[in-house]
Length: 447
Image (cartoon, rainbow, N blue to C red; front, side, top):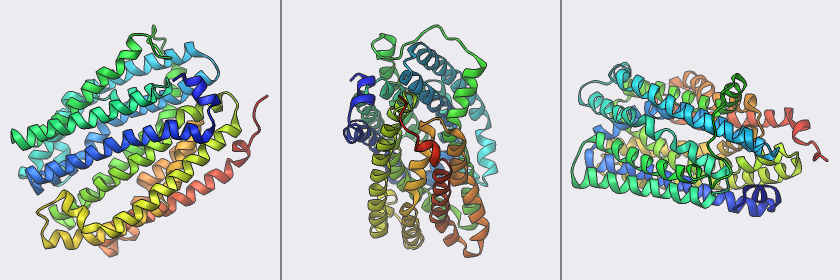
């Protein structure tokens, strides 16, 4: 579909369904695979491997965070440039971003591979527990140069109007990774490293397929001779900082919480925390898919001066996010035992006694989490990286750390309550942000 016509002339509600629903389906496919990944590791390799994967996961996500910084950071100025009808600049940003992502993947992969044992040791893990976590990290590190670009290509496809193509690629990536993981773990009985290899293999396949329309010159964006400029680096880093800081800050928080859980609740507490993260990993991608898939349209219309259209699109985003979150609260609160058994079929009474109340407290997070999430996405789409970054870092790091201290007397209950408390504080911050920017957000359309 022609991206300019889609973003500028389609009614906001229809645009929401055309862009947001495929985006949500894409993220749902990814979330389903993450869930299946946790189920396969827990069921085929046992609780120690499941805990090791969750201990390693923050470092794996950090591996992708710099690529995400560049991909998201490039997508915003690309969309705004296209809205201003400056296709030459949009193609240059696209080309430079792709080269930067590959180079970053090489550097971070080397660093992560070499430091993996030290990082896991600093987390307080040892023995088999630590060894499995190191194996998992190192597979991602080796594959980093060819896997990190896949999420950026997803953004670039949607900017060019390949919305359904992006959706099908995400479904293919999740399906192929799940099939390979079942083959590696369930049939060949390989170790935890094979779970990482399955995911990386699916990413490589889809990254190569995603490049085809750009290499053939069939997309709005195309590869050109790159012109790197200081202003370009600054623009990409500035616009990508909210997501990057969210990833980094969130992983720092996860590392901190895992370190506390290892020392206070042992392997079982880390496993329960992993269940919460896998549950969040199913819901948050739905919110992200709906909001993020509308960013190209919002940025395009902001660049074109169609501010009333931007507000109409964002209204759809906020309402849909609220609905998804409300449903999430109900499902998690009512089915904590079933969710626990999904990931740990051999969960004993000790784990169940810890997991059920943890999930019920965790469900309260989504009463307010959607509002700050949608606000952050809105700010990023209209090239307002500072307020988006403030919301991002506060939600992922500042508020959780403050609440760790305040809720420390409650023990593990304080850790489980941390998520809901953070969501409330983040929603308050989002309200303040929207009020402060109201004059600019309410501006009239350009002539």
